[in-house]
Amino acid sequence: MQVFQKKNIKWVIVLICVSIFVYLMQAVWGSRVLPIDTSVYNFITKHFISDTLTPIMKVITQFGGTILMIVWAIASLVLITNKRIAVSVVSNLVLIALLNNILKLIVRRARPTGFRLITETGYSFPSGHSMVSMAFYGYLIYLIHKNVRNTKLRWTLMTGFGLLIFIIGMSRIYLGVHYTSDVFAGFLFSIGYLIVYIKLTDPIVFQKK
Image (cartoon, rainbow, N blue to C red; front, side):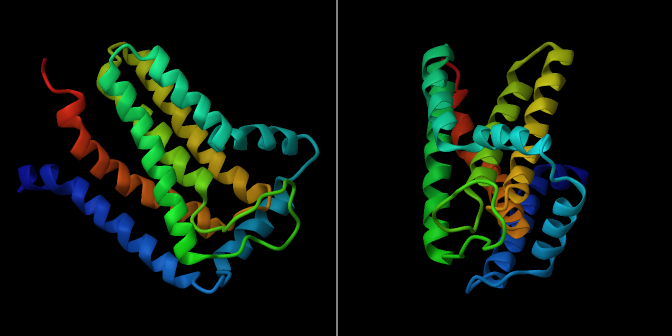
């Protein structure tokens, strides 16, 4: 029984992520605003928004943006000596960006109409920054866990990237350009996606020469 659970737990996680994502997708259909969207944004505006934190959030949100992701992709191809890993990092980024755009066009949820601290265009669901950062940095976390032998360095990098993913998502709500459900849905989709992506690409990326 324990062997079965260990072997199949990842597919249970995929099923949970997909199920909640689909639920959220139908819940926001027609640009509906959920109670959690309003309550979380009100909490953030009441307790966190300040002249000191806003510039920091504007910088952090760029780590999930298109320009920096392109830079990361180019850097991966140049700096990662194992070209199979380099290509898998870039293909992961391209694929998740494509999937995000497709989902946005399907759902067509309008962005929040309240106070925005930055200007954004396009549809809102799911959050592109959240979805792409979870897939991209999440994949880096997986590669670090698999390849970095130094325990202290491994956990430092993994924790750092994990916090970055979370803060990028929160920055989208803080800046008023996404609902909480956009961010949560983006995270969930990419967690499920990553499990499938890793399962399909690992035999190619890490095949013995």
